[in-house]
Length: 159
Picture (cartoon, rainbow, N blue to C red):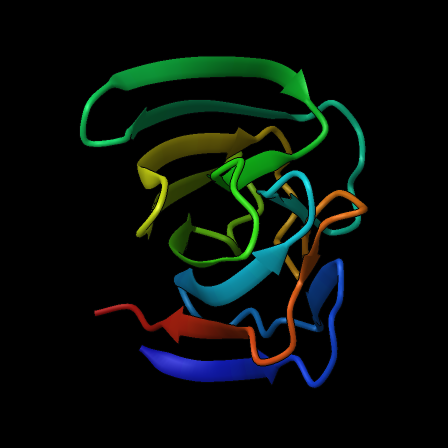
């Protein structure tokens, strides 16, 4: 992994953006360690400012006592962490495969966990062949990432 950028919030925010992402790696990895507050804690990601219905995902999640799954098609974002509980520390690891390839759709693999809620696994698809040069990570208002939350973006070089 090659560090590309790190953002540590000095104040609360509903979104974090990584822009001008270099196209010199084969894959990207995003690591989020954040404390979220508010009424709904559902972290989502969009690529290249695309708010159209070009995303789909399948989520598997478990709480230690129950497991379930959900599928979304024609969505305007990909969920990378959903807990439903405020004021908890969240950790998610997102892999963006072949992000700089301009002939294929982009796949997203995500693993997340939090102490109060359980764990999640998501596979997502952005139905666009453009190279990813911008990531927008958001929480819906009135929820927000608390100060001290950290977002790290890494490039993975080809072997």
